[in-house]
Image 1 (cartoon, helix red, strand yellow):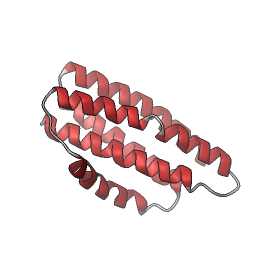
Image 2 (image 1 turned 90 degrees about the horizontal axis):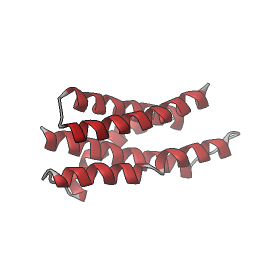
Image 3 (image 1 turned 120 degrees about the vertical axis):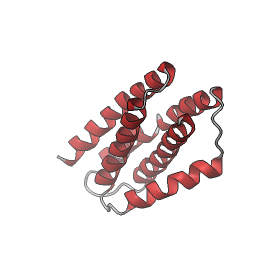
Image 4 (image 1 turned 90 degrees about the vertical axis):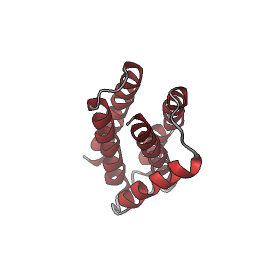
Length: 136
């Protein structure tokens, strides 16, 4: 159970970082600069978040590799890319992460992982707020 949960979260974080980074690089329009900076703010912490979850996974003997994470991330990216608007796409991606974290937390994980995932969910609630405000 923990293997599947942790690798799914890692794939989500990997896909989310890539999606947000591409949105940062391709921002355009009248709100270009604000959008560019917002996506930078969203993708920057994802490397450290991925690293924290991955290090915990290794500490509890969960195995993964770059190919498996990328393979699991690809369908997420494909699904998100069906949404043309980068703000809406990012919001969908962030909500998918929240859903996966909630499912993981509801499965009664060990306390250290539960705490780490709740912290991750909390930090990404700020991303959801920023994305919702930018579309208003």
